[in-house]
Image (cartoon, rainbow, N blue to C red; front, side, top):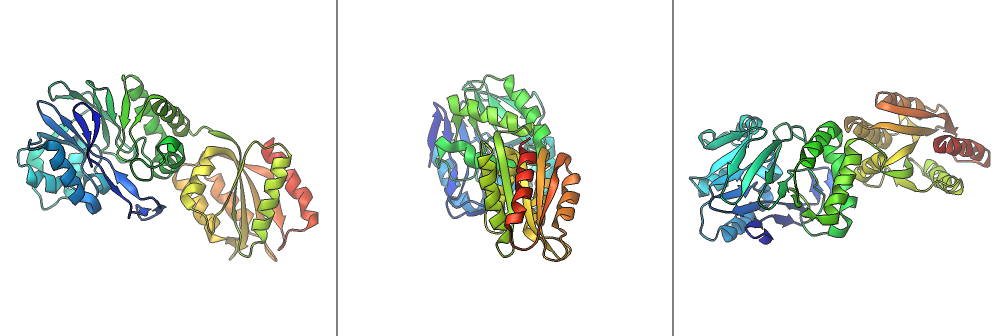
Length: 389
């Protein structure tokens, strides 16, 4: 499909409802969209391509938007295959088109297109460079490590558009849940870009100096007006690793259900003590991406896990490992372990958490033995008081 963004900027992206495991790890039950745009001016610029799964439809959209014109430039913001798979094919279709990208992208391009002689067609740009199309002038802003080192974004001064690469993206198809952008954008941010809060913050500062009417990401809807303002507000919180929502997140990994039962009881205790929001996830059954999202969303977390092979039950280990590689930080975490004869989960969890930046392990650590008993309730009450203090 094509869709008008402004008088001479068209959306030519593609929805792929069959893509239900993005990057082979993130559940996307509605599918994914791969956004691309065309600027039709005295000169024509194509802004990114698409994923290999959707290239045929994308090329049809491109041809429809061009309506017989020849593109002068292909601007490559991000070389990841879900956005750049069509570079070689579109270059073969339009022999005079030049590729505009960062120097790092040019360096990396042979990794994906080793059999295609693209180097002579590449124009490299750096921070502050511009490209005049006619009414539109493109201003290039480098955004390394948001979330790859070659990333850049582009500002169009005529229509005040920011082509934001993976920044401000979300899981799902193009128009899905546009009114509830934050839900899937939050899960997307912390799982895709979350490790790179510093570079994201730097990009936000650069963007603040621009007069932007619309943000055009590579995934998800175009953002404008109040939705754009709210997205920028949330990105400012997320990139600084600040707390978005006051409350407690409980993540549990239970072998036979006894630790899960204790987690449900802790939810009741926390609510009775006035906790404004309690979120809970079953690490054995629920989406790991959502668990990572909630761990960053809240400032306080309780990790509850069974002991296993003198360590911690693997679903909890996997969760904490993911938090570590996503730069989890500046949070308070309480621990509850369960072990019938040699409880070991708390020691293993503490060791992983203490390797993270400014993560405080809250005392007391609670140890359960098998099934939760009435005699365990005072310990849970004390832990609730401690995490809420």
